[in-house]
Image (tube, rainbow, N blue to C red; front, side, top):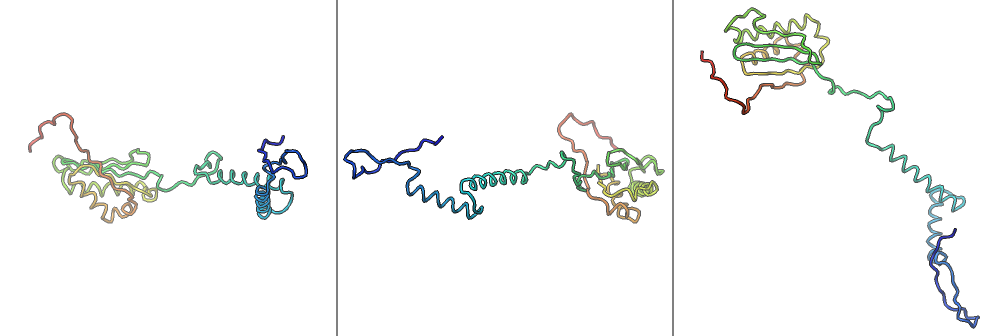
Amino acid sequence: MRPLTRLVALRPLASSGTSSFNLRWLSQTAARREARSSTESMLQSIYGGGAPAAQTQDALGNLSKSMVFDSFNKRSVDTGVLMGKPQPVKEDSFEPYHLHVFAHKHNTHVTFTLPNKNAVLSLSCGNVGFKKCRRGTFDAAYSLAKYALERLVYMGYTTKINRVELSLRGFGQGRDATIKALMSPEGAFLRDKIVRVTDATRVKYAGTRSPTKRRL
């Protein structure tokens, strides 16, 4: 069905004595015909020859389809996991091993854990022969750190460890002693694999009043 368009009234016919008007469709005016012909010529130059109407519809349909497919191809959401494609895993996404050092005034504790946080080695200065007040000294902590590193070598973790996180807690003498041990030849296998150093010292904030400190 032809769409409704506005009719344009032209001047009266000279030959007839009546006052009738010559009517024609607005789409058939000279300006509209020129615009339509220019559009068809442009589309033909872009998409080739052929029937103008059919070629125009096919060209516009192909153009719309290509735009839709391009929009889908340029999506920012990666759906490769849903399609079963293996995704590359970044190295930073792997959890490293952990070396925890808890150094307080009276003792030093060294714990080595797997990436899943399961402990495989946990020692204190009492395990290397120091008793009572000597457990809080620098020498005791240094001996403990060297012994812990030797145990890791004996357990075969030199080839298993790729990345290590060093976690320090407390401000006792064992804090500096452990770092000195890592800088020694015994800690050479672990020193280059440390990727992160964190301070896990607890800071008190508000809460109840602390008990009176012990005087020595």
